[in-house]
Amino acid sequence: MNNKEILQKAKELVELLEKQEEADKVLLSTLKRGDVFQTTGKRKYKVLEQYGDTTKIISLDLVKENVEFGDTSDYKTSKVKKLCDIEILKDFEEEFEAENIETHTADIITVDGQKLGTVDCKIRPITFDEAREYTDITPNPFLNDWYWTLSPWSTKERGWKKALAVVSPSGFVDISCFSNAVGVRPVCILKSNIFVSKVEE
Image 1 (cartoon, one colour):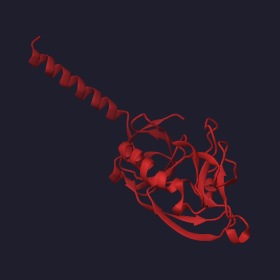
Image 2 (tube, helix red, strand yellow; image 1 turned 90 degrees about the horizontal axis):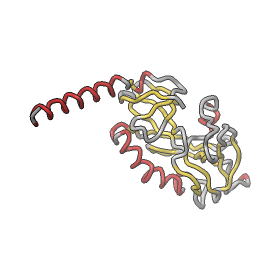
Image 3 (cartoon, rainbow, N blue to C red; image 1 turned 90 degrees about the vertical axis):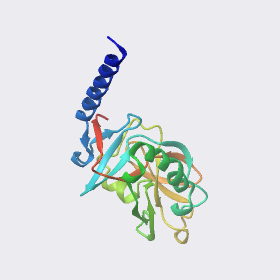
Image 4 (cartoon, rainbow, N blue to C red; image 1 turned 30 degrees about the vertical axis):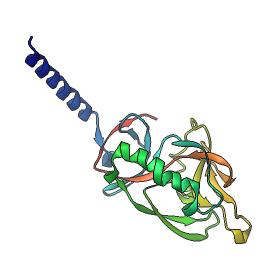
């Protein structure tokens, strides 16, 4: 077998492997609430909700551990937002491609129901309201730590200047001071016409 024939065989093998890989993938839009998927094998994600041509997801595991929220309970000026906007976003863009991650608006509402505004973002922590809404599918007993929400517990005027809601691996929501260090388990919204591999947790 000469070099040309070897190259042709190699090309055919690569094409066969690519077809096999595509055959194992599905459109993200076909997955249901609670389904788990991955793209590169680097990390697993869980579907929270389908919205027409977009899909809200959360990482199955913590993306970062031992992260202080900052010196404020205001997500907009927090260390966690900076981490999500730069380091974690870059990581997600490498995995999903930047054009597939949607900018969206999240409500900043305290645990006791005070509306403090909104924040536009691509990657962010879960909110307290989402932690309640998806409590049947988000628990992961294999997490190493609790993780941040972006929701303050209350406000300075009500005596809770430094407190935010955090979520345990089992899904229990509690209070934590912004100077404590827990995990970051990001939420984002993807275009749902991308191909992913459905996997087990």
